[in-house]
Length: 517
Image (cartoon, rainbow, N blue to C red; front, side):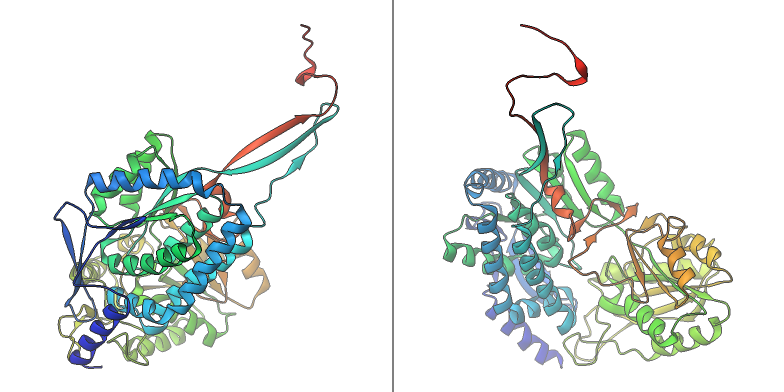
């Protein structure tokens, strides 16, 4: 695909998604034309050229959006949970019908491959169907009472309006993990996307709002595009938002957490990952190579679950690194819309700068460059933000290996024992995703035990990257707290009530207290 062909793709994608030259980036009930004049220009990382502009919210429009959702919350809770599930399922159906055009918009704005762009929309579809089934399974427990003729049980109720702040690398999927689950629980949702994914948020909201209108449903989702620090601070400090789900850097997440904690609000924090794969001498070499390479290279290393470190058993180190080096030297880099491309562009010029700085620091700290990736120019897309991936032999004491660089840099370590590998694996501040490649049962079970991986996600013979929506997603340590998506993550969007019912003719008091009136 040449530069002219990509320009045609841009025009076609924007047209199919109904994106105009200037879009309104605020939605509550309908798309709002704000009085403020602030705008953001969307630039495609694929060719570095302008996609479109969209308007940003001021404080008045933000407050109006939250107020709107508070009012809608009352109406939404008149709808039974199974009916809510039907509505969310219909949203999934609509997303399925629009998967190709929305996936293309993800590719255009985030620089993802065709498969990854459409895969992101498929995640939204999957979580919509999951949430639909969940709507009939919002179970509470029953407990035995110590008092005669008493019954105890749990009831789960929605918490109100929640706020979701999403990142550029998954501009729509991670929002849906929160929004669709929260919605079937009875909540309304305010969405603050990264401005680097603003067009995707507008395209998605157009599809969803149209579906809700057709169903005669309340508009339970609102969209506020705005400056990250500004709108993010408004949300974190706003007591009307009962929970803030934030995806982004650890530094920003800490600030969000402090502000929400001051008002005793709730948070779900999905922050930095510094994910590691262990490759044992007992591993299937082919599976390990494929899993490590995909984990490190997919989305150009711009996943929170990307593999950033690999620990290789000394018995197979030379062979494994030789073959991994060959992959890195020959992996095609280029236009993500082109067949056979796995590594596309970084998100912007700043990301390329951080990539170069990390390589310089790694070298200064004693890292041995195995494959030295550098910024490159793609014919016809010369203004795009492309780099070749880097492979670096590292030592555990190198501080740069304890920092997440959102780019395709993989640090390789050698180890002698599984205990040593686990110690190095756990030596970083982050704790999101991990994996071990082995066919040795004892190694596998040790990695899964309390003395093994300290991450929220643990994989055996598969990549650190890529999480199914049925499992709860989240991490430990500086990766944050809370879980999103599957399993029982729904409980975070609800409040638990412990209920005691006395169906007797007396009122026995707890702890044997005697009291007469």
